[in-house]
Amino acid sequence: MHKTVFKYRINELLNKFSVSEYKKVMLLIPQLLSVSQKTLNNYRNIKIDDLQDIPHEKVVILEKLFGLEPGDLQNFIYVIEPLHTMNFENQLQPLRVKASKNKHAPK
Image (cartoon, rainbow, N blue to C red; front, side, top):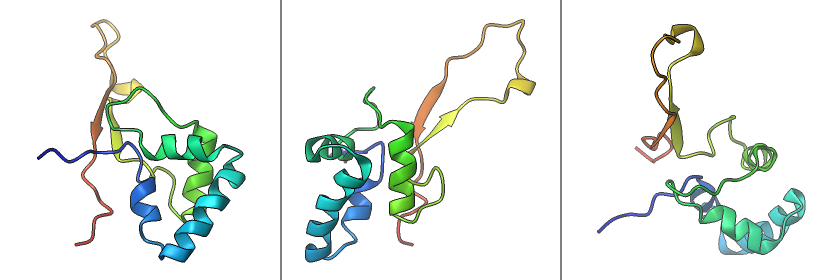
């Protein structure tokens, strides 16, 4: 069976709350992000290969709300070489995105 991989760890982080905390957090987060409950639910369900994305400003706010370091909310990494190492004479390779190994999974 294929496990759904989400682009962001929002569900994983929300599931760490108790039921009563979860209910409160689910009311609070949309207010703090200035989005609707439906938009938050859409954010939670973005799959790794979806073109849809969360605006950067909202990602930064979510990382701060969950006490994460920058970049720790995402479940993916960009695969690209730095500009200073690129050979501009050859055709550049397109930007690739791949699911990251979940460094946040319990060991």
